[in-house]
Length: 135
Image 1 (cartoon, one colour):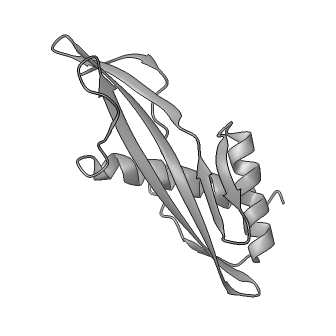
Image 2 (cartoon, helix red, strand yellow; image 1 turned 60 degrees about the vertical axis):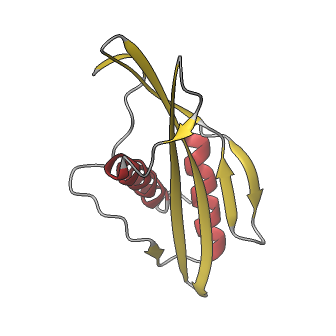
């Protein structure tokens, strides 16, 4: 496949492993994620702090051509927060990865691309972890 446009899909630093449970209180975790999404220009569709849930809008992925067919991808995130204790918060990021072509409408391709989904999730975890030092 040849990447014919749009941006390359983001990836975390080589060797990065998300923690998922952080030594920060719920409010700091929420602010850090909000700031990260704003910095990365990722729009929210819904945000409910009481339920500990954020849902992002779709983000343009890559456009690739293979054997004359063009496939475009997009992804979005559901971000869940759970207060573990007064200074520990679990953040769970779930990425939805979709594609479309001229003959197929948008459809989920996450199950057939688990490595790509894991990289997209790790990328956002890394950005969020880096933002803990800024809040």
